[in-house]
Length: 296
Ligand code: SF4
Image 1: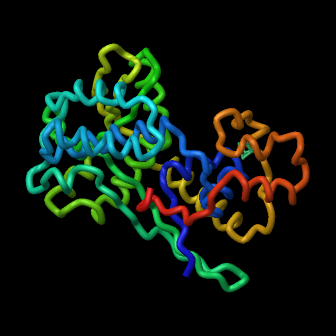
Image 2: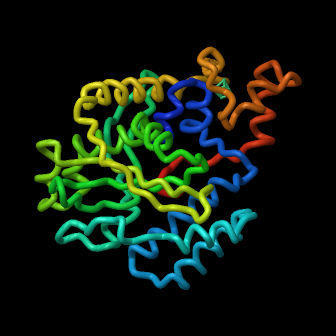
Image 3: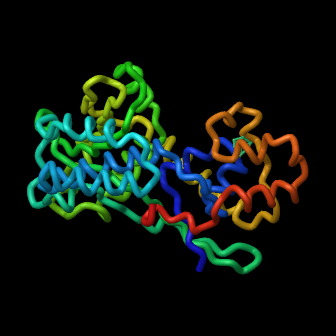
């Protein structure tokens, strides 16, 4: 049985068959580690440790060590982010769930099993990690908090971006459709009647000093039907790409999606215009490992 893991990052790649194929099916990741990624991970680690009652000193030491080991170049900036962490902006954890159960909550839901015409059996999982689960006291609702390090100055623009985020829609959809498999029984009442929200928590790292914010909770109740269709279509696309020989079509070029794509050097290098050379370039620039969100 061949596992295929779909998470929000995978869904974000549906703009281009090739980006989708190389990331989700082939598991290609750039060999060169990116500093913003490591900065974001260190910040998430720090927030998790503080929520789990680690002291400022211990949480900072662990997160800075992680950052330095992953090509971190701005430890001072990272520490200034840590010093402005403000636990008072967050709500309480739901009754019966402790800080460990409510922080970095990973889910992995078996979604569909398919046997293709060549006899291969695929099992598709829906995966993701919720940074923090807490109660929203005003609405008596469950809130799925997502931290994001934001380099933009304008908090309003950052919130607007989040509102349209496929990641947020995906989390909301998974919890509405499959939350009973993720949360303990006493919390299932929140999954009905629109008592579930996703809430962005941007960390404005360009501000001096940096600021930890929490935006208004967002409901995607009105988009549940569209998300059913999007996920199903994405699964169909994955299954057809899984058995494709050679490189998938670079259709992200048509919709002008290439500038922020990891595979820009492959698709746009003038020296590599044929399929074989591009495969060689892929081997040179990217590692290949199973795309498994549990190990990110
Ligand atoms: S660079 Fe463009 S065409 Fe190539 S994989 Fe990325 S989005 Fe697709």
